[in-house]
Image (tube, rainbow, N blue to C red; front, side, top):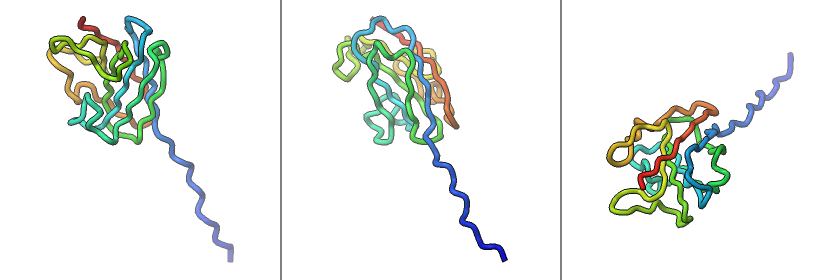
Length: 136
């Protein structure tokens, strides 16, 4: 009789990576605030989603960087070019004074896009390219 062998150890699972490219920054001042969420009710403001991925990247280094998604799923990304480094989007008469952008680059009319129009599937490593928009 052959001895029983322990089951083969499974390879450790790694979180998927979203390779993110930001284009159209009007300057290299400040930072780019990034919000990656699966919570449609918390989009685009990740502060309402404890499970979101939030990070700040120096604007000078925001051309291409990685964001690690916690797991596979449907995500949306919102970014803000926080030029003055105060960790928020500044507005003037309800219009953003700083640049912003979203995954899948949906058309912006009044207010932010819906989660659905900015969402994309993450089933492994993926790439998103976001073009910044400036209103003022």
